[in-house]
Every structure is written in C-alpha cells, then in structure tokens.
Image 1 (cartoon, rainbow, N blue to C red):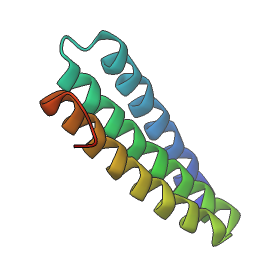
Image 2: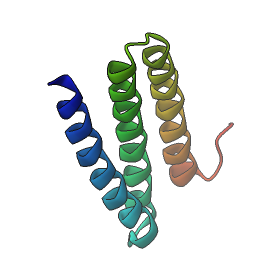
Image 3: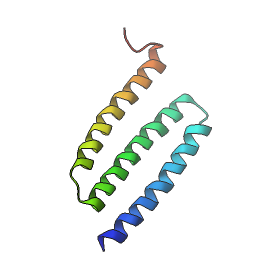
Image 4: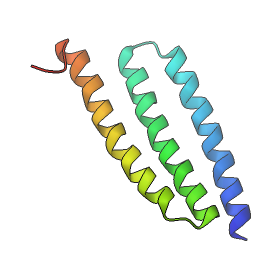
Length: 89
C-alpha cells in the first residue's frame, strides 16, 4: 500500500515541479522567479524524501537535509543580490 502512495506523491510532485518550471521561465518579475526556484528546491527535497521512503534508506534523508540548507542559503543570496546589487559587503 505504501508503494501506491509513494507513486501518487511522486506524480503530484512531478506536476508541481513542471508548474514551477513554467513560472521560472515565464515569471513576469525577478521576484517571481526567485520564489519559483525556492519552491522547486522544496519540491526536490520532497522527491528525495519519497525516494528514501520507497528505498528504506536513511542516506536520502541526510541528502534532503543538505539540499534544504543549500537551498535556503541560495534563496537568501538571490534576494540580497536583488535588493543591494552585490552579495558580499
């Protein structure tokens, strides 16, 4: 039963990633593109977690945690670049 749930979750996340990709490419402003990229990182974390559940391997959860940290730092850096024009002061 868990296999069907994981497949359904992966299908939903695939649809979400495609919609985020559309917003990333067609976003009218830079802020929309940053939000779409951050949401894509969150969806990628969810995909990694679902693969970890399906495979019953703990290493996927550590990879998801690392991607979450890198995604957060990347989003902060993009926003700081948009607001100030440079990342390092």
